[in-house]
Amino acid sequence: MVEILFAKLALPKDGVLVLPVGEDQPLSGQAAVLDEILGGMLSKAMATAEFKGKAGQVLNSYNAGPYKRVILAGAGKPDAPRRAELLGAAITIALAKEAEAVILSEDFTAPQAAEIGLGARLRAYRFDKYRTTQKPDEKVKLEKLKLLTAAPKEAEAAWKIAAAVATGVEFTRDLVTEPANVLYPAEFAERTEGLKKLGLKVEVFGQKELEKLGFGTLLSVSQGSVREPRMVVMQWLGAPGHGDDKKGTKKPKDPLVFVGKGVTFDTGGISLKPAAGMEDMKWDMAGAGTVAGLMAALAGRKAKIDAVGLIGLVENMPSGSATRPGDVVKSYAGKTVEILNTDAEGRLVLADVLYYAQERFAPKFMVNLATLTGAIIVGLGHEYGGMFSNSDELVGKLAASGEAVGEKLWRMPLSKEGEGYDKEIDSAIADVKNIGGGRAGGSITAAQFLQRFVNNTPWAHLDIAGMAWGTKDAGVNPKGATAFGVRLLDHFVRGFE
Ligand code: BES
Ligand code: MN
Ligand code: ZN
Image 1 (cartoon, helix red, strand yellow):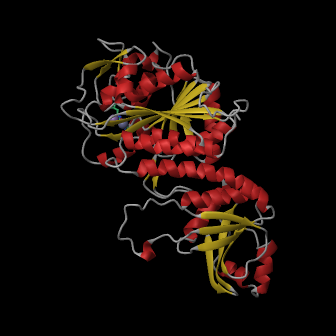
Image 2 (spheres, helix red, strand yellow; image 1 turned 45 degrees about the horizontal axis):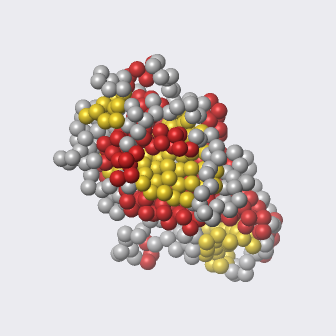
Image 3 (tube, rainbow, N blue to C red; image 1 turned 135 degrees about the horizontal axis):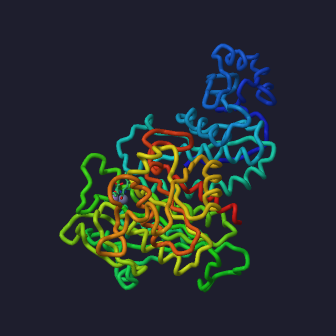
């Protein structure tokens, strides 16, 4: 992990120095002073290399005066969205082979300096615990970034908050990246118990407890696996007025509730998936991973709000004990479900957890995240997550937070119960069936299924199947697990604090 530090504006004596330069801007301030000391070397290099300060553009000068390396880093236009964090990400890429560097963030406010740090740290994420033969020159070396700013104390305060969010994102990325032989429901649950040290209350429900509760739809998914299911309930009681909670008896009041699909591996079950690409289904727990990372972020930055995260953890396997297509099971809500395709399992897991969440916590509102359908990728690709909701207010706030952090959401339609798309999931022999009539509108019929288990709670379902995993580097996300939703929901929660 890259360490981020802040210090007062003063040119360092030596080492690696990064100078952000705005688009079509000349060097200014300390950078201009340095250029003069260096006899105009930097400005001449800018002209020769046609360096325009465009976002992502980088110009290296080695052995520049006392410095090993001076990097001019394009900072783009002043009003570009997420300018500072994207600059931080670009600097991380340029610095991969350096152990440390100093960034002159003179043109940025203290909070923006913290954003540069956030972008740098998020982009520097690596998961190499299983690499045993990596040569030293293949490794990213960056360890320490020092940002020079006029108000280092203020930047540090902003950084404390940003760092808590970064830790949440990293926690999620680690979970999502782990292979399914390592991360199965019990192991996932155990890792969430590690979050107790942040002040979260964490409860874990095992097979027996879930049976006793009557989680029939969730259990129908896990029954083919030798791995036992789990449900984890994570509570953060940060709203003012709780006092201390030494006895652990305090209850959340009007909490914000987040629910995640945690299928640690989705083979499809008896409705088996094709072999090609099935390895991707190790990240079918990204919704749950995101909820866990979000709770870590909220606790880490001591959010002044009550929030509850619930995750349903199962493995979907074919076996002699697996659910058969055509089976009918009873959900925790009491509704019976005809399972016509065992690969439409995420909704079965969520149905029970969503209903439990409402019954126990009476949420102010509820947001669930799930890698629910391949169809959402057909519809929206990898640019927007799908958003389904019974509340225009939630939609507005979630969409705005998504834009602010660069995790964008696009609203999809949802019919009222008994109307339109909802009729597709009426069953001939039970209360509801787990798939629609055909492939058409597959993401919508999945959302309609979830809605059957939502009471009057304002609710949004985010289908993140296209966003949880990146096949190439993009912005603050190196390829692989993105943790899409952690920053979005952290930002969204801030609106209620
Ligand atoms: N986990 C998948 C959805 C998915 C697909 C996520 C690709 C990420 C990438 C989900 O459980 C699933 O299998 N959905 C089926 C539903 C169908 C059987 C109605 C799908 O999308 O094909
Ligand atoms: Mn599936
Ligand atoms: Zn799935």
